[in-house]
Image (cartoon, rainbow, N blue to C red; front, side):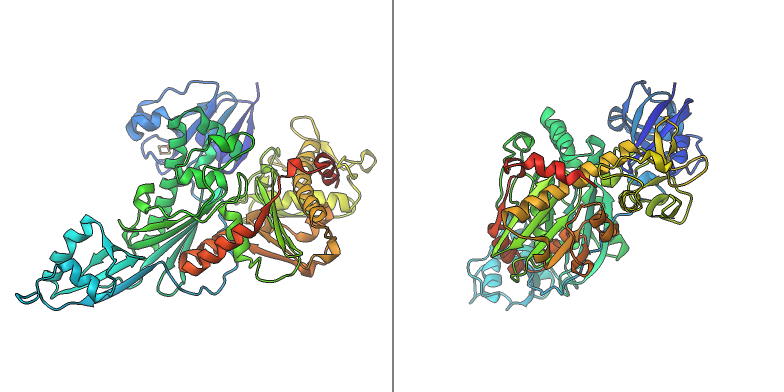
Length: 596
Ligand code: FES
C-alpha cells in the first residue's frame, strides 16, 4: 500500500508504493544527504531523526557505532541503514544536507550610529609603593574615574596578575558600572552577535562593535521544527513536561552557538570575543530562548510571563561568548506580538514620521501594524505555513528544485523558474502565489478559487484529484483544488488583519502612503500578484517597499547602540495591540478575505 514520507525542515513529501531506504527516499524527494561512504553505513554522515513512524526502527550495529545512546533514544538513525515501509516523518539536520534551503538573512541596512553597551579602555597605572598602599582594584577604579565600578571575583583575581606581569597596564572592558573582562592587550575589534530567532529559521549576524559593520551573516533552520511546524504545536509539546520545554530551549541555544562558532571561524575570530548580544523573536521563541515558562502562551488569553526588556548574562542562557558577555532581549508586546515585530518596526522607522504606513511581516503567524493618525496599532494573524509549502501537495520551502516563479498564459500554458536552475521537485510560497494569482487573472479559477470546468485545464494527479500541472515528466509538480484552498485560507487571514486595522483607524487604501513588507516569503513574492489575489489592498506598486529580514536589521541596530534600545522601548510602549478575534464581525472579515 502506498505511504507518504515527509522530510523536515524542508517540508518535502514523497509518496512510495514500495519499501525503500531513507537515503534513497531523500534523494528521490530531491534532498542531497551527505553520504561519503555511498550508503555503506561506515561514514556516519547521513544522520536523520525519525519523528513519526508506525514501524519500530531498531538501531542497527552501524547506527550504534556512529550515534550516541541519547541520540539513538531520540530517534536518530543513519538514513542509509533505515528502511521505510509506512507513513513516516523524518527530520534531516542541516549538518546532513549538502545544499541547504535558502536562509534569508539580508535586510535593508541602515547606517548604524555606534554607541555600544560596552567600553574598552587600556589603562596604565603607577606601580604600587610604600607611600601608596591602595588596592589594585581601587587603582583601576581611579584610573577609569568610576568609583562605583564593580567586578566579580574572577575579574578581581585576574587584575593583580595582569598588572604585575604587564608593567602595570591592563585592558578593561566595562558594561555600565561593571567590569566584564580584563586582559593584557586591547581586543582589536570586540564582536557583537545579533540574532533573530524565527519559528522556521534563525538568522545570526556577527558585528564589529568598533565600526558597526556586519562581518558575516548566517541563517540556519530552527531545529525546533522537529517538534511542530507551528508555534502552537511546539507550545503544546513544551506543556507536556519540563523536559520537553528544556529540549526546545537546548535546541535553540545549540543552534545559535553552532552558527556563531561557524561565523567566527569564517572571519578568523573566536566566540570568546563576542562581548554583547541582542536576541529578538516572536513571543514563544523569546520565552524558549530565555527559558521562561510558556504554558500561559498556549491557552487563552495567551499571557506572556514578562514583556519588559531583559538583560541576562550570556552565560546564564548557555550562550557561547566571552564569560562576562551580556544579552539584550528587547520587550515583547503580547502573546503573539514579539520583539521581532518591534525590531521590524524599529528598522522600518515607524514612529519617525506621520505618514500612513502599513507594515507586514509574513510568516506562519503574520504580524501587521498600521501607523495612522498618530497611532500605531498591531495585530497578529494565524496565516499558517501554506506559504512555506506546508499542507500543499508539492509544497516545499525555498530551496534548490523549488519552483519560485510561474507565468501562465490565457490557455493555461506555463513557464516556470526553478531555484538552482534544475528539474522542479516542488513549489515554494512565491511560486504558489504566482500560480494562484495568474490562474485567477486568466479567468481559469473563479472568485472562490474553484477550477472552471469549461476551461479544461486540469488533469488527474497521482492521487486521482484534478490538478493544474506546472511541469511535466515523472516528477511533475501540480496544484490541486485543495492546495488552492489552503493558499486562499492563508491569504484570507492576512487580509482580514489588514482590513480590521484599516477599519479600526478609519483608513482607506488610497490613504496608505507606504506598505512595508518584511520576511523571507515577502522578499520573493511579486506584490502585484499579492494584490491580484486580494492579499494586499490595492495601492500603486511604487508605494510597496520590500525590506527583507527587517527583524534582523532592527536587532543589529539595537545591538550597536544603547540609545536605539531606548528608542525601540519607547516605540514598544506606543504600540497598541488589537486582539483580532474580539473585533466585531471578525468572521465576516475573514470570509471576505478568503475570496480570490
Ligand atoms: S552514507 Fe555513510 S553511513 Fe550512511
